[in-house]
Length: 195
Image 1 (cartoon, one colour):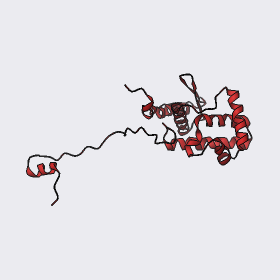
Image 2 (cartoon, helix red, strand yellow; image 1 turned 60 degrees about the horizontal axis):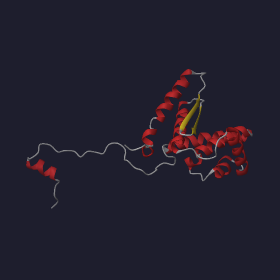
Image 3 (cartoon, helix red, strand yellow; image 1 turned 90 degrees about the vertical axis):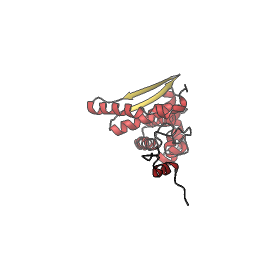
């Protein structure tokens, strides 16, 4: 015969007047593994940024705008943008996704890096997450705005260009940006110093 749990036995025997419910665990699990494609950025947001940037890259290729193409490829390199859709690297992004010869893409990237005085290495994960989460917030707000995040020494620098032609759109873009970026302190708990 099957045994009843002790709390049910107590209720049936009259030793207890109520049955306690088991508590469900609340909050997120503390998992140290990187679960996303880009740490600190939800996968659906990373894919939306990737798609928007690929559209801009394709438009620059179609318009044969080398300056814009170089700047966009430089930003893609700083972000490691290809990770958002599991593309294998910059060459695969150029040839397989935007339809640009890898050699031409590399040349434009080097020109843009020299012109802007930037290194050709990916930014730290926290800077990439801030940039991508800010950009997806601007996409959601429908603002014609642009965000760039950089690292200078130990300083993380956020540059935001928002047109003020429509104050309502600019205000909603800034509110959305702050709202979307506030989850970063939870996303990077392992990077913070433990007390």
